[in-house]
Length: 437
Image 1 (cartoon, rainbow, N blue to C red):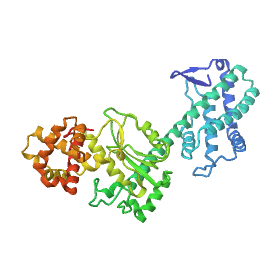
Image 2 (tube, rainbow, N blue to C red):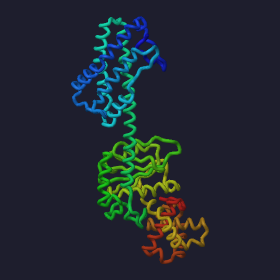
Image 3 (cartoon, one colour):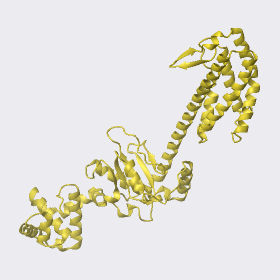
Image 4 (cartoon, helix red, strand yellow):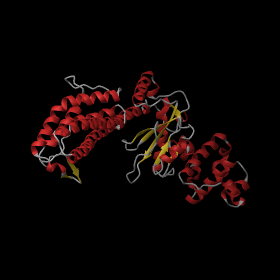
């Protein structure tokens, strides 16, 4: 007959000192220990409560403390291991100690205090088992091994609690992500009107918000959902849209306060107080290896507008019209977003404004368009325009005469000049005209 067994590299090794203990004496030890279990469990629980007065009391269906049940089952399992046949595996009360770990996790506590309680219980149990061993004259080497076995048994109990704790942590993390997505859905929802990225009011600085979060009922729901995830509603936000890299990448470590939804095809994030000191630099480091765009800072109620600008920027990145490989800020690319996003309107205006170039060859038409844009931007004479284009002033004078012939008095009309500059800047942003200056 053997007692205390320990797992070693996946197999069980028999403790040698108990081989010399007569089987009758082993059974007697186990019987006395089992008889002591109910009273010993009560004593251990009493000591634990004295040492940890704030320990919550959780009762089972019958009204018995779960802690008492766990202590009693742990003691019984350990004693049954003593009386088991050779090679018997330790008998752990799995569900009870997993539940202890789950409870710590769900209440936001660490496992440190729980492990300290377990160690206290083992010391108290060992004292009583040592008394029984002395009473029936179990050899000291066997009792020493019994003490070692007790702390190994404790490790098994801790493992079960760690499993429960991890399960609770995963469950809480999943629930938090679910609630966070619900919060973001409400925050970014809106009643879409006729305006879109490209309408100046949509840049988010006006008061006429169409956001659902701007309605009284929605604001109340927003407060409630924010409270459930512990998110303090900021005055201003910026919304980011990310492009997934070709290779699988870990979620950016955006830190606390930034809402991040990685479940959508293009991950989104809501950055509170984006202009706060240090926030841009923190985001830059967190976004290393990612590509995407962050919309302009807007009042909280206009978060959906910031999202639309970020989405517009990402679409331009996908078309190669904005640089990729990093997370851009829309406020640094306003010209491209304003001129390239309402593509149909700009193209219609371009057809009308640039009609005089229709009869010029492609290369010559491009040179005239570049000269016209340089002249509109500088409003200077031939030398200034020539310096901007890198050509001879006489060449510019020749082209300007042609421009006068093609457009006539229209180039003197402020409205026509403004329209021409808009469409030519849009062409340059698309790479259809050379960049100068």
